[in-house]
Length: 524
Image (tube, rainbow, N blue to C red):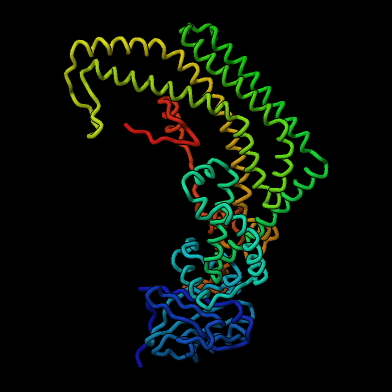
């Protein structure tokens, strides 16, 4: 028999479940992955197809001397064999033999129950801390048929889907998908929000409930909806119990009249010499009277709305049954309705300003002998006669000298529109925070539950005797709160909100393009 040697070309990693170490002696069952030099040993591989044959032995030694005697009695084998020992001092030693040679190996002790309990360790491409080792380990541990961890939550979500399916169907059906109805629905934040909720419920119904990620998302969605409805019903109770509809209606009407009076004063100020600026008198008076007449019409609209506003608020308070997010969406619609005149002023001023900027750029190309080719999207050279140049000069002069007056109105009403959009953005952020809040994950994170742990921690176990092999402890620890929120994102909602970059926003404002909600595509 040839002499036993030690190979140095590769180092194996042996993963051993901590459950095995609690026994006095046993056979080791597991899986050998030769292409990655991994050996996974766990009690869960017992009587599993492909793992019926023992690949090693584990035993406890009385002392270090008996450990040496046992090592001498162990003979190398042709097949891979693992000899795992634990002495009285608690030191572990691992010896691997294959083809009558001893292999270098590192020993990693892990708790298979921690991997099974964690929702996050079963997801793909999450365990990147230790490279491919943890990914393969989690894949093998979760290779068994997944089970439904919370059947009660699954039964409750069926009832929950049935209750909210009726509301969603009324908002999203064949009739409401026609263009006039769909356009009207897109202008209401409440209808858009409920349509997204219906799409979310359909995604839940069609999802694979056996996936742990789906189960965690389902529990988070159910808890979120429960909190949403509780807060909404509570707000509705206080709103009706204390009879606050008349007070809120009076407050809204008073505020709307004050805004109208302030706008009236602002327009009269712009009709004079605002901040000492010299404006075109005829044009500013025309624009001023135009906007003043719209303010007069707006006050008449408020007079019609005032008697019925209290009843509208009382019936709309029942939206709390759908959740507080529905009430916040309705609040956003109320703000849009009460600032409709500001939006109209902004659209009028933006259209006029954009027309002047576009015409000035066209006449500037005329002076340079250029013309914009719409079909080929380029500038072409062209000859203009004297009459065209003369007419272009007159129109260019008129537009150039009236541009400061229109630009001033555009800047003022754009600033007012941006203030309204800022209020909408704050309201939307609150709604998005409530919609994306993983309530179950946050609650489990606060009590340090094993279900929400998802980070990897390797720690070395010191040995009293130094050798070439090392022993590590692999643990699943709690992840940071920010990382928890990112991993617990709602898997059933893919609606991406529209974001504005500062460069695009400033460019659209300078060019006079309308910003949210009707965003026009800039064309060069």
